[in-house]
Image (cartoon, rainbow, N blue to C red):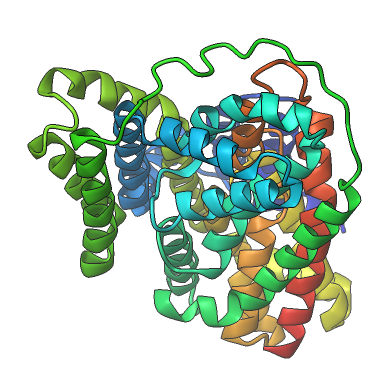
Length: 434
């Protein structure tokens, strides 16, 4: 047991999780963890920093995709499409509680697939709906669960939009660590995780079905700059959305898709050249943190591989478990939960856990499909409950526009309970059957 605790990988992961849990910036936590892991393995500080910087390139495409999609989402907001959608939803869904929650879920699903703007739509779309939701006495905890499902379930199970990024990260990191798999094979093993997510959604909608009272407080900026009629800018924006999706599917690249969408909006006059600087700044503000976490996580994974401590950790852990496959799977899932809760991003967690999981699964004779399901599950676990995750920050940004929705108790706790528990069970079952 002492050998496991003193392993450079274990030490670095403990440092990373501890720093994240006391709310130290994720990037600084990852850098500190890399320094600790490298130093424990006998690497010099210049070697650690060189390896960290070199390893960042492994996630360069994904980071660029996040930044460009953030800019695209900001550009879409300028056209007023989200304002128009909010007004339409309010007129159609007033008095229909379940339909409203399902509509929010669908919008969140679309934001990560067909219109890859991620959480950018929530602070634009949700605040204008709060007064109507108050009149309907909708429990916002249920709304948070609906939004979290839409933000999380599609990328886990469907290789479109952010799902393409996630599946590519899983496949590339499994391949780099000695277990080759193609990106388009990942969804064959992740569907069972989607079943777990659907189960959590149904349970959350049932549990939060009762009335909850809220005050009709003023929502800042709600209803301002509303587009009155559907015009040229909105038509161009819809063409840009189609161009983004088409380019992404044709080239298999989210950055190219985002560039295509931005080009159409500029060429079509939906956004002006003088607005580009502000739009790019908005995109960086929206998605820059995620992009940098991805870059540093790639560098951290590179340092972990360079320490040469993976094999020692695998042998020590397998020896402690006594060859029990059931205990082995449970331990891996719990490790993933802890790390993702600390880091706050399933995308950034994959490179970290893949360096541990793949060698251990190879040693235990776990199949490629089961390993893929385990990594995806372990990475996604905690995403819905982490205070630093987009899956929780996004819903809170919209639902707390009037100051009546607590981030921890009304978003993080409900989503943790209703998604992480069934997701862990689904991942365990998937690892046994694949």
